[in-house]
Length: 231
Image 1 (cartoon, rainbow, N blue to C red):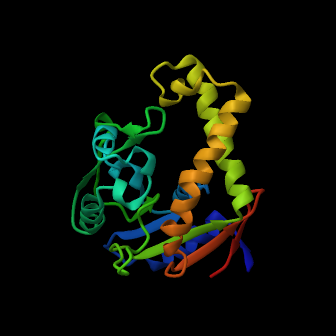
Image 2: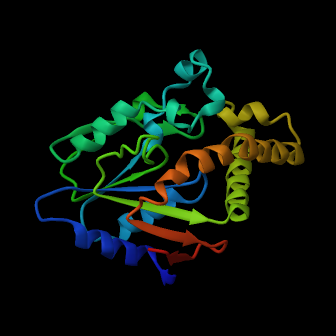
């Protein structure tokens, strides 16, 4: 393994683009591993016209997840509109694509935040839902980047994010996390750890990690957020 920076990754990605075409790059890894942050860092450094598309927007709306009994499976493959995600990724090569968006504050798809992507040199598709399915079928990505990390570090990042949203909900009654404000800080932290253990860890191990052996680029993220290039 060798040290690598987001700028190094951006250079590698830019070198893969063919003139006149849109390069579609997937960025995946566990919940809370830093997919969104790395996508933004790469976009800032790539030196071309870049759009970032989050797969969170392709989650089924909460009302549908509740009707299907999937609220506790959010982030698992069955919680996504997989056909719409595949169609959007394929469409990025040929013309304008309108993509949905997601609000982490409301914990739901936000129809008002949908946007259209057109004419980008590079589109970074970050999030879950990018791993091959059990039959090995893969989405039409030009490159797939997987962010790996030790579980203890991922847990620390997940807890930090959960607690930040929990704290912000103290002054935002519309936040999904307002429902947890009756908990003490210690209770909220314990609840978040249970969410990791019962939901996010199984999803990571059983589904998300299927992308690791097939990824074109694998980086290992350390507790201090530094990156090492695995392959």
